[in-house]
Length: 107
Image (cartoon, rainbow, N blue to C red; front, side, top):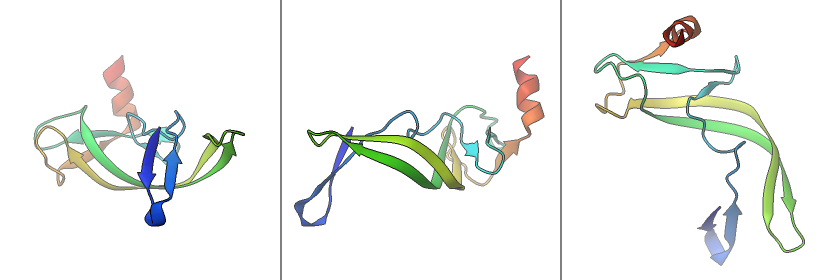
């Protein structure tokens, strides 16, 4: 759980749940399928910094004691703004791999 100071001394409590935590692979909002990246500069297939903007709807449930639980999170829109290779820092040579090529790598 994270607490952040808002203006005027108010504290906002955000509970990070499995629904709201970033996934290991960014999901393609239009297809609902995970996206796999490859860095053309160094060949990295596993480590990327991904900046996304998400618009969600969620049910906020406060307990009698004031604890917040965020439930039923639904992603309405998701946009990947930037992808950078964690190994070499290159953000210009990132390729999105086709779903069929990522499946063939596994088997």
